Length: 101
Image (cartoon, rainbow, N blue to C red; front, side, top):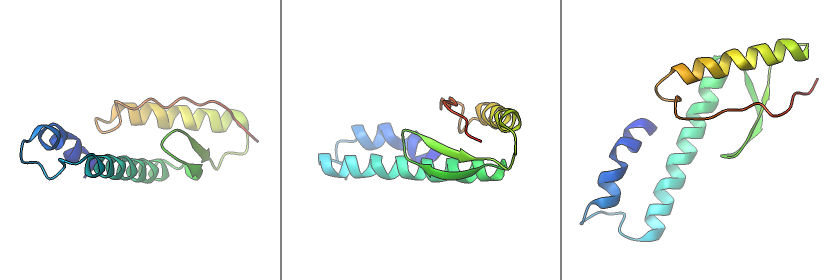
């Protein structure tokens, strides 16, 4: 998984006979890691009752099943605090910017 790739990243980068010796391979590896992390995050958000409308590595547009802005904000705050408590996501910063109804 992504966590094991992150743990082995120093070995991959610093290993003398590394298969990632060329810059293109390194960039490809890091892009793959970012994609996998985003995929895992989306799956975890879904398991917390949130849906994804659109997203990339910089921002996510999240849908909730709540009909009020206050309810959606409460659900989102709960989901973010839940993610922060999990070791896999504790390093990530998620900040709500806008709410739509």
